[in-house]
Image (cartoon, rainbow, N blue to C red; front, side, top):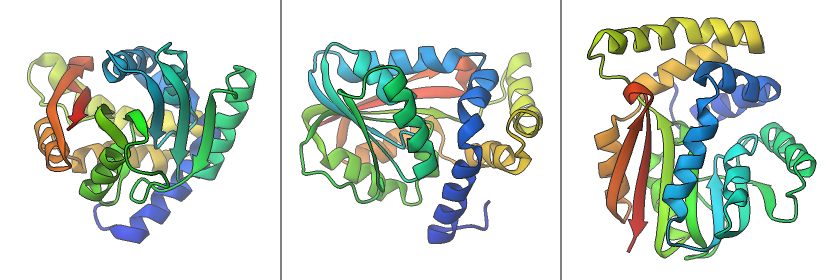
Length: 239
């Protein structure tokens, strides 16, 4: 993946997520031991504390973050946006099954050019997608643009583990070698789940993402580490 850049990388990632869309939820649940649901709940609480109004979920995938936002009594409506249509088709079916279609809608779109006016949302979230953005500074500026002053931008993401401690040395090895095996077994796509640890290795460290969010115009940026440092929730406030 390191050799892919710009539009070529965007096409690769879009095709990859389209291939694994039907097994995406299952593999996420197995790989995280089901903890990804709790992480999203925590992220929603951090996003909406003291706020109310509409929410945007960018890189919405199969919709789990959007549905978690819709469960918050402070969220009036949710738009989930993603570049991969097959993922959103699954999200739409799940929304109908959960009977939340009146509060959650999904749209194909690009995080680098969001189709919304300035200051439209109380919060914007990105779950396990920010490392796939082709131009991270541009996408962060766009996401910040559509959030209301005083609103929040929240990222839930996987990061390189620092490798400290006995478990700390096992986590990177598990991620690099077990994840592709699980992807092959459960999704029939070893290549896609080889990309996952590679994309994490290529991505920023948590402190560097904090700096990038600040450069996009967010203030009071902080993050909470989870899963022995392998996952973090970043929160920033728009001035």
